[in-house]
Amino acid sequence: MPIPHKLLSRKDEITADFLKLLNEHFDNLLSGRTDQMFHSRDFAERLFIHPTHLGNTIKLTMGKSPCDLMEERMVEEAQKMLLTTNMSVAEIGNRLTYSESTNFIKFFKSMTGTTPLRYRKQHLSELQDRLPQDRLPQTILQSELVLA
Image (cartoon, rainbow, N blue to C red):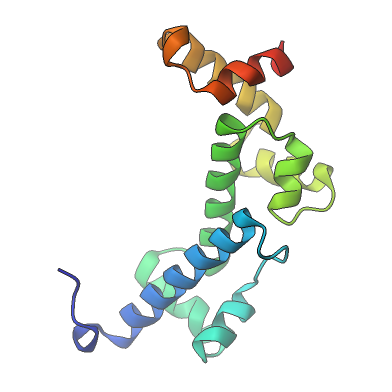
């Protein structure tokens, strides 16, 4: 049962609203309903608070800045797409608002320590080693042809 809205402190309310907006924004990005990445100021504007107040509140409640949370979510979505779709690295970067694939590759590598293509190859080969061929998702079997 969710906590009644009245019992949440203001900082918890801001955090919950920010996370809800962040999820909605990524849903819109991934479904193609938007092609623009929000910045902290965009979220703050939608919450009717100052960007500094949003940053301080999120840092206090989550231990990370809004930017850190957005970057982590972007990496999670990129990793999912790398393993579950046949989209190229450039297409994934474009879906995540990177018009230049080189910028997406640099971002991904700075966050994970590896390039998107190397991540895909490594994790797909691990999946192939662990699961019998008949249990692998179809997208993995199809991407095997691309990676070979």
